[in-house]
Length: 368
Image 1 (cartoon, helix red, strand yellow):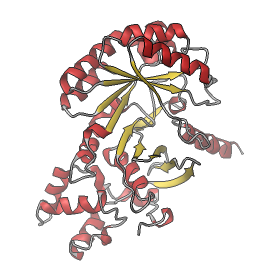
Image 2 (cartoon, one colour; image 1 turned 45 degrees about the vertical axis):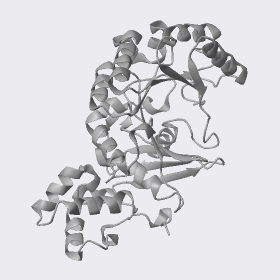
Image 3 (cartoon, one colour; image 1 turned 180 degrees about the vertical axis):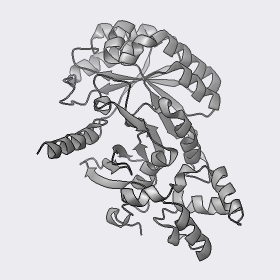
Image 4 (cartoon, one colour; image 1 turned 90 degrees about the horizontal axis):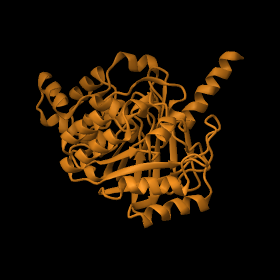
């Protein structure tokens, strides 16, 4: 039987500061550590199996490892470094966690349930520097990158609160932060998720989202794994995209499209273009027609996302009629298109919203 949320270790900042996080080590690094401490490299595979597939919450539960070596692990590492600050569950069974990191900052992760899959959405940074005008994640700016272990721990936390017969089947790297701005931590984290000695999640079930950083898109392509690349386009021309995604004025849509073409040629994976529909901003039939002209000759997929209303941004959710009209214009224009099903509407569903509310609460306490 899986432990309840309250039984999962809730680490304090003072405790974590003393010891490194074991999930910050790759398989090879952990194997070398085992060798250096007079054990065999296969011990690393045992440890990782307990962490990623057997869902243990402390080293003592690894009962096929000697007590002496378990004590050595406890003396050198922590298994968890976060504390669950808030746990929200939606009426559609979407679950969202707000996690406190060892330095007092916060990140979010989400579990989205479907009949045949459980998808986890994870963050890669504390805050975001991209400045997308509709997004709560970047309203407080960028604080720092997450480590490999902090990225993985979000999945481990959610994996330990789902039902005993349930498993995480899909990963979406689309939470707080720009994933490609933290590739040095993200790539080994994805390797762990993909590796059979980790969680064994197929590359085709892992989606990496980006605002569109051409150099980093090419770098990810050169890893040559079949990850799904999702580019947050949000506009069919540079003038409008400069307003919605400020980093675009240093890049431009054409360079992004050139990089996605390279990604497709290198990996063989069709690229998804995310397009958030903002009422009265980028959701007109003219915008849809322009987008169709831009993408119809590419092997691409467009995922339309009706905006979640976030009070601080001032942007509104489009009407169902406007979403349907945009969809039909793209479809008639020869573009493969879907509309993302909205999940968790009755909780703080928008990316970064729960963290933002927490930071506002902290500011209010300081004022009082």
